Length: 163
Image (cartoon, rainbow, N blue to C red):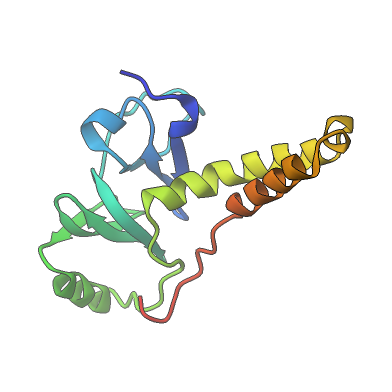
């Protein structure tokens, strides 16, 4: 079964792989880490490096997170992935790799959706605000649009001090 278009998203990593929540991967792999398609919208490589990701964050040259199989460190250049049973094991590996400064906070699939689709939704609502139709709307309708605009703010993905 296919998902509705806005349920799907691909988010490019700093190393040009993608965190993917799109057909044909959702059913078998959930949110996953995979190579970028060579041609946008045409999947020829069905390789998946990490399946069923719960959260992830970017470090220099690496994607780090938690998936169904455990905590993971993915090297974006070599494509090697290591799994760890505990977060302590993950943290020890990060120290070995000298990955002490994350580039982002921990991200979730909800953040992935928000990072891909919020700018699109926001742009449409901003365009609506400039239209003649908007001028004819009631105050309540305009307030509802303003409330929606607040929902579609791009999330702050900067690292936090506790991660």
